[in-house]
Image (tube, rainbow, N blue to C red; front, side, top):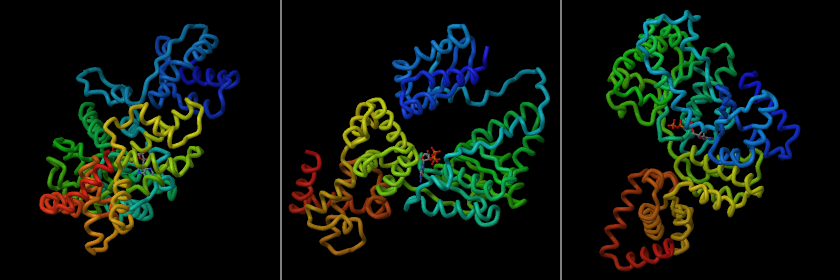
Amino acid sequence: MPNYNELWNQIESELKSESSMSKDAFHEWIDAAEPLSLKDDVLTILLPSFVHRSYWNDHIKNSVMEHAYKITGKPIRFELVLKDEIKEEAKPEPVQTTLTPEPEKQPSSEFMEETKLNSKYTFETFVTGSGNQMAHAAALAVSEDPGTLYNPLFFYGGVGLGKTHLMHAIGHQILKNDPKTRVKYVTSEAFTNDFINSIQKNRQEEFHQTYRNVDLLLVDDVQFFADKEATQEEFFHTFESLYNDQKQIVLTSDRLPNEIPKLQERLVSRFKWGLSVDITPPNLETRIAILREKALADEIEIPDETLNYIANQVDSNIRELEGAMARIQAYATLQNAQITTELASEALKSLNFGTNLSHLTIDIIQNKVAAYFHVTVSEIKGKKRTKSIVIPRQVAMYLARELTDNSLPMIGVEFGGKDHTTVLHAYEKIKKDIETDDDLQRQVGDLKSELKP
Ligand SMILES: Nc1ncnc2c1ncn2[C@@H]1O[C@H](COP(=O)(O)OP(=O)(O)OP(=O)(O)O)[C@@H](O)[C@H]1O
């Protein structure tokens, strides 16, 4: 009986030789599938999305089962799983209270699973814009001169904005400059689990070796150190040892060090020693640029207007932006159609993307308000303080806050990178003024009914 990899490879080549599928379709549905295991005649296959699974169930599974039968002489069943579903199983095993001695392992194999840098997360694939420019620059600087300039380098910011991507990019770049560099990437949870396991198995020395004999330590999502007293203690010593040896440390978190609850004061202060730099949500132009890069990388043609449309649908999180794009691609393949704005809209709707998504965007509001007050969109986004521009600008900010789900910082970004307090001030001012100013009340009313008929 072949193992799961061999079996899958054989099935794949059978499919390739007999299949009527186009090259693109083969790539989309077969290349994207990954065998995970073969147990009790069940071959588990990992698929990238639920669209893939439903396509597999409808169009692929039977033929794959036939091939598997031909190859093994056995009826092989298939389990199709998605990434999210295996996460649970893939989590490190809970601490066991067994007395059976563990087989001896070579030092470092226990914790040092090898550096798992995502090959796609490089500087080449990272699109810069106003929200991440400084973070990108700091990352590049650290890659050129690790351990000296900014140590530690601390990235913070909301979900899915590229913190992990930049962190891996540093790892890749440093390895490119010097392939002998010892790089370790872990999430704070993995660090915690390694630490607990080391205590459990009485292997603290090995743990220390693993974490202290590196040249670059990348720790993702350190906010999860919150509340973990003993782990924090251990991490403190790891940090001290690396820092004293001038080894580079890069950390990410969803918030600033002093905002992480129950983080020891000495860690807070150390995390702030180097440089803390935030990543804020990308503006429309950056979102379009990211989509354009992605289309280029995937070699698919998408009209500019459609890229613009997609970028307007997802305005906070790059992971979701990529998700939307992947859905549209899959949808186009399913329909065997070109990607157009219509198809994109259909794909996002039919796949129930962003259920509470408002189609009203800040961009639309700015255009409407500019036309209404006879000013230009760039004046609305600009800094000029003349009354004829300030009022439309504040009205547009007010409407963006009232009629869309965007956060104050996000609205600020879309208005030429203004601070969220400016947006709040505009919102409160217009809200108050419409109570006493009849003209303003009518104007805002007109605009509202045009925007939300
Ligand atoms: N500037 C960018 N250019 C290209 N792709 C990007 C950019 N920023 C983020 N991405 C992509 O968006 C996805 C999410 O990014 P990443 O995982 O780095 O986010 P994160 O900030 O670490 O999120 P989390 O807080 O959830 O860990 C990744 O696929 C990443 O490649």
